[in-house]
Length: 295
Image (cartoon, rainbow, N blue to C red; front, top):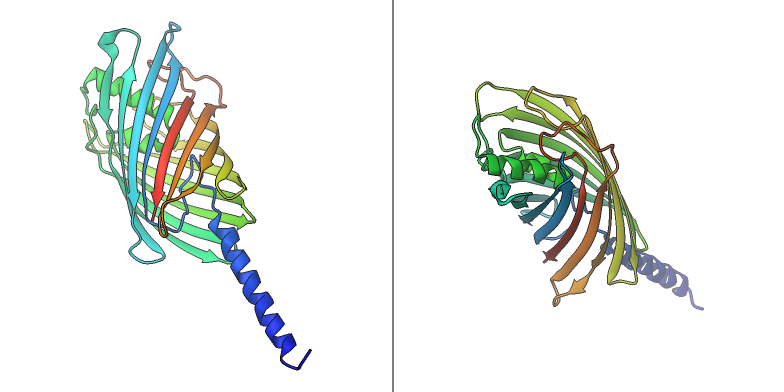
C-alpha cells in the first residue's frame, strides 16, 4: 500500500456512505393522512368510499375524489392546489346528492438535513363550495356532512361556509427504507357565508410510520388526532376525532425522471361513535385508492 492508498480509501468510503445515505432518503413512505414530503413535483388523485349508519340503522355510502398537484418553484418552495368532489348514496333516492368542496391552495417549504426532512406549510380554502349558506341545498349539505366524516383530514375542504387558514409543521426521519413522520397543524376558520361572522379554531397532530419491503412496495400506518379548541353554534361535530389508517403502496418507475405511486388504505375512527351530527354518526370507516405521479 503506497502513501496515497489510505486517503483514496477514505474518500471512497465517504462517497459510498453519501451514496447509500442518498439512496436511503430516496425511499420515502408517503402517508395517508399527513402531508407528503416527497421532494418532487406531484400530480395525484385520491378516491375513497366510506360507509356510515344513520340513527335508524340505514347504510349511507359517500364516494369522494380529491385531485391535487404540487410544483416546485425552487428546491425548497412548492405551491399546491387540491380540489374535492363527493357524491352520497343515502337511504332513499331523495337524499342522494353531489357536492364540490372548497378548493385548497397553499405552499410548503421543505429542507433536507442528512436523513431528516423538515417542512412548514400554509394553506387557505376558498369558500366557494356547493351546499353552503343559511339555506343550503339539503342534498349538498348532507353530502358535505358525509364527506367531513369520510375524510377528516380534509374537513376544511367540505366546511364550505368557512374560509380556513392553516399553519403546519412536519418532521420526517428516513433510514434504510424506514420512514417516521410527525405533523402538527393549527386551523383558524372564519365563517364567510350566511348571516353573521363566526370564528372557530382546531388543532391536529398526526404520526406516520412506513417501511419498504424491497424497493417497490411500502407498508404504512397513520394515527391522527383532531380537537376543537373553540367552536361556534354552527359546529356539529364532536370535540375529538381519532383515526387510524393502514395501507400498502407500490412504487414504479416511469422512465428516468418520473415514477408512479399507487396505494390502497383503510381508515377507521377510534373515537366513540358520536351523536352530534344530525344525520350520520361521527366515525370514519373508509377505503381509499390513490395514485400519485412524481416527476
